[in-house]
Structures are given as structure tokens and as C-alpha cells.
Amino acid sequence: MVWLLGVSQIVGYGTLYYSFAILARNAAPALGWPEPWLFGAFSLGLLVGGLVAHEVGKRMDRHSAGAVMTLGSIVAAAALLVAGLAPNGMVFAAAIVLTQVAGTLVLYDAAFTALVQVAGASARARINHLTLIAGFASTIFWPLTAWLDAVVGWRTAYVAFAAATLLVCVPIHALLAQRRAGARAATPAATAPTEPAVPHPAAPASAMWFATAGFALSGFALSAVLAQMVPLLTAVGLGASALLVSTLFGPAQVLVRFANLLAGAARHPVFPALLALALLPAAIAVLAFGAPALVAAVLFAVMLGFGSGLKSIVHGSLPLALFGPDAYGARLGLMASVRQVLASVAPFVLATLIEAVGVRPALWLVAGVGLLGLACLVQVARSVRPAH
Image (cartoon, rainbow, N blue to C red):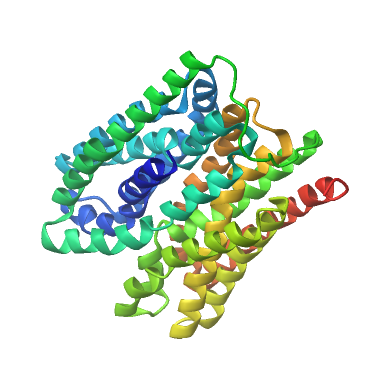
């Protein structure tokens, strides 16, 4: 199940998220729309996805994550196809909005819920394994998208991504839905976990809200940078090296997840969460201070990958450790709503700030938002410290 979900997450993140910034550069002039308008559509999609995330989480708890993911991958394939065939900017923008709404149904939060529905409180290790596999999405899809854009054009690239989603993700998610339904029929009660569960003493209600705010603020910083990674590195003076440097982000994610798998199993997930939320603003500060030096750009990509790699694990494992598996989908959906609402405006805000004050001051401001997220998670750490 972890391997199947890993493949679907690579395709999902690659086609719905990482490819957009590269394809938008040529799509904008071809459609006669300013590029910031397309990023505005991308942000609107993240916003709408965030607004429906809580309800999506409830549906996953009520039915199954696999069933919701099957529907989401069908919607994603249709949206990608429409984007590739769009006759004008309005249709293309609507398709991009729909891709991000579909992302709420198929990406990490949905996959984490699928794992928790099978493994209960012992799903923490499986979440780590899943993110270890899916960390290759950017490494595969940034250069693949750039190659497709150069060889066959952005329209054919979107059509190819639609086909990949339909032929790879839909069958995987349908199979997971069938397995979940079969497991329910065979054993109506939840099966006992086969691994020792992470203890999760009752956390104060404030921990939920501080964790939600911390992940949302750090997610704003990460989304602002990640949605336009290659153009941003070009803007700070990397030139032709920008694409090559950006490919370090994916291996860094995988490396830190592997290290966490080996060394972090016995620790409460609040510790890697603190490290993740500290690395993100630090990476952005390194780029703002050191670019266009290549060593600064490389350090930025690696640190950002470390922070993002850990964050993608702990935003699923920390709520599980704090509150347990009950109503996990709804809880993760609520956190995702706040996180995605802030993330939705991040690419547009960064693009606007770069136009208004320049690329380096804009990066410093985004790093400051990331520091606020770290401060919120420090409050969560204080609430769990007596028990761990």
C-alpha cells in the first residue's frame, strides 16, 4: 500500500503542483494573459482547496480515503486535459483552479488518512516510508516538465500529464478503495496495530491551534518559494544553473526522511517538527543573503529540501501523536484548510513583493513569516514536554 501510494504521490505532486511554474511561462503569452494572472488562478485553486479540505477529511472518515482519492484523481485528469486544450486564458485558469481542488482529494493529507485507516496509531512509520518515496516528485518532474515544454510544448505536456494521472493514479486509488472496503467487510472492528503505537497523551486544545498556525505560517513561506523555485533562482542571478540547483531539493527531501526513519522513530514528532520549521526560514535567509553565489544557492536548495522533507512527515505524524487516530481525517482536514488558505496567496504575494520591493527584500519578508510559524510550534513543544 505504501509503494502504491508513493507512486501516486509522485505523479500527483509532479503533475498538479511542481509542473505549473515551468509551464506557465509559455502558457501565459500563448493565451494572452499576464503570467501573474495565472499564478493568481493557481493561488485561487489552493484557496478553494483549503476551504473544502475539512469537509473532504470528514468524507474520508465517513467512507474511505481510497474512494475519495479515486474521485479526486479522475477530476485531476480531467482538469489537466482541459488545461492542455484550453482555447483561452479563462478556461485555462478555471482548469488550474480545479487541479488544486483535486489536489486536496489526492495528495499527502488524503494519503496519510488512508494509511491511518489501515494502521491506526502505528501509521507513523508508514507515513515516513511514504514521504521517503514521494520525495522524488520534484527531482523527476521539474526536469521532465522542462524537457516536455521544450520538445512538445506546454499543451502536449498537460495532455501527457492527464494521461499519466488517468492510467496510473486512478487504478491505484481504486484498488486502495477496494482493499479498504474488503477489510471493513472482513473485520468491522479496527484491526489491532502490529507495531507499538506512539503514545499520545491528551494534549491541550491550544496545542491543536498552535500547531495549525505553525504549519500554516511555515507553509506560506514554503509555498511562496516552492511554487516558483526555478524562476526565483533565475531572478537572484543563477541563470542557466537555476534548473540544476533546483533538482537538489528532491534528493535533500529524501535524504532527511531517510535519516529521520533511522534516527527519529523513538522521538516524539514535535522534535523533527521544530527542526523542520527552523530550517525553512533559515534556507530562505541564506538565499537572500548569499545569492548569486552558487554555494549559497546550493545550500538554500538543500536546507529547503531538509525542511520540506521533515515538514511533510510531521504535519501528518504530529496530530496523530498528540490526539490519536480518532477523527484523524477531519482533524487533518481542518489543519489543511488553514494551511492551504495561507499557502494559496503565497505565490501571488511573493510575485507582488518582488515587483514592489525587489527579490531580496521579498525573500527576507517571507523568511520572517516562517519564523512566526516556528514560534507557534515552540508553544506546542512546551505543551508536550512534561509527557515526553
